[in-house]
Figure: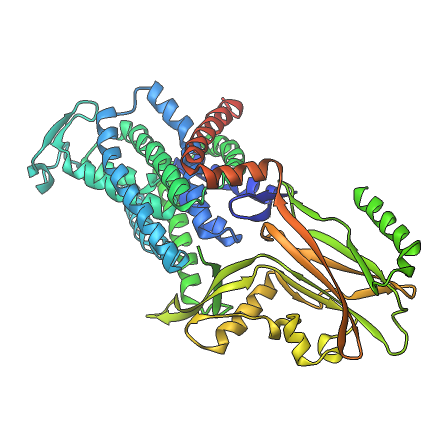
Length: 304
Length: 248
């Protein structure tokens, strides 16, 4: 069944979009991530213009993360003060990101730039994830549990503007969360992802937040930053396709429930290793596209 | 149904008073509106009509049908390899190219018309006026032609002008799903002895209707409101979906 996408100005098989939504939703439910990093490249692969893929991907991420945020919030797993601090950085970062995006679009380099961002970010994050989970798996096999310090002091704790984050049991400077929020917001606007897969490790390893409230607080940031990206992309680039978003969401929300049900059967380290491999393979696939000789030496695009 | 009624009416006119009139050619479109709705996958429009003289006569007469869409600006970029990565490199702008162009004929235009006339009526890709800015390199023009043909927006002899009986003719114009909205001109030319002896101009409107039209016009006219709506709709759909699909 073909459906016409009014903003992308093309028709696409609705079942294909539902299927992509379901598949990505299933994986995101399984791994507990938003799945934007899979969705946007897949959309570009089936021929959706990258500007529309990024903007609608951010919109979809918003919808897919809302119910998770509500659930975490009910359980009291959201540190509002930390969430707002991250979001303040995210607001600035995503605003700058959309400007950069608009500029890249004018230069005709959106496709290449988005792919490059994906390759670099996913490559690094995927490699780190795989390494971390493999060492954890090996360590478990050897049966030597590492002794972890309750609280590590680094140069980050010497920064000024300290604030007490009661729910996170932290008394730290607002600068690191602001910078992290900014960075994730920037990437979120350019890549059309929520950024949960980068935010969660950053919160655990850099900020030292307790794992219990990391997911809820990162969802808080993801929901509000992707809302901001949606708004700015719709307003300044004009590339949010609500029909596309809705089709992806219907498939995605259904898939996420099945994925989450299956995810409970997997161990933490194995899940992370699989997720890391998935992230890495997306990065390698996109890198391959950038490196191989294109089938056509020229591209055309309308003058906007 | 509407199209069928039109065809009957036109054929009636042709067979009745049409023969006596001075016009050597009468043509009509199966529809004057192509509507892009949510289920749009492209459209096909029939150009049909009749000639006063039998088409196979002596000297032979030929028919040409040209459809032109609203002009648009296009940038053609050449991919270049920088440190192993393929980037968009040098570009040429074509500020005014037809967004859609389709040519059909009973024969190839170069067989029946001299270059002058072909140029005057812009018949064939070679005779399109494609003014360019930037890198002056014929490769860019060639690439433009190739890419426009690849996505179906420019067509040369994609379908023939077919004849039925002695005087009736028809041609099909196929619009891809990526067709632009706007006014389209369709010209029907009658050629005899290397000259265009009659022409008729028809027009066609491509427009969005229904939900697709509402969404596109809202997104363009009030982008801020549209952005807010997208946020609210996505949030609602996500929340509602998780309630519906909840598995305990």
